[in-house]
Length: 333
Image (cartoon, rainbow, N blue to C red):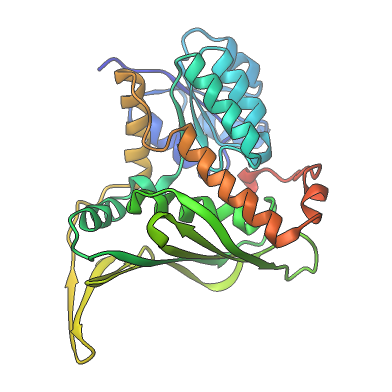
């Protein structure tokens, strides 16, 4: 496999992880970030890597054939489109956009230009999540009836459109992936703002999937105790994936009667999900295949969240469309 040259645009807390992984995979060519202090620190850490401030230099450089976009979500559409049209394969952090029409347009442009477009739905590459998907496919849990995903933590910046747009892309993409089914409709969506404004920092969304499977998703920016928990209830057994645990993250609970219960701890190879995700991106470029979390996958997630936001906020959604969340994700992640 030849080494592809990747440029990372945006190097905040999460962007630094993306930089580290592409560097360790011997694929990092350039890092682009607006923050001068970030650039100085990056140059000290990666003296052999090109560190710049202007993303147009990335798009104009023929040595770079792929771009990782790790910037605030409201900037994704413009940057990703320019990158694809410049002949670059693109990995973009979730969500691909906060507007479904933009997500579809990016997917169509990537397909037209024969470029890989991959969305950073990280949990689709988590070894435990993939082990769970195998169990579901093998029928170990029986027929799936219910899914619940809780993603609760503290975030003092609250600089995204809402906690739902920040965290729920993980929940929706992961649920669709493990079930192998498409979302049908949003049943309900409610949110609350601890600051008494339209930026929701607690959200609850209930989604119906194909075959009548119900999924409930809870996300929070104000929970003092971190909780990252997925429950999948089947007719034979229930699986619980707790990503806050250092071991035994995935467990299966079987019940043949209310008084008899069996718990099984499942083994899997523990590899950093982001490393697997970055490797997958490079493999897709090399082999010319669609990514697991491709543009269509990204569109489906945005469509669900867009519908949920309309239910949650009604006409207030229009007022958010023009909001410029000035603090970059780099300050948050």
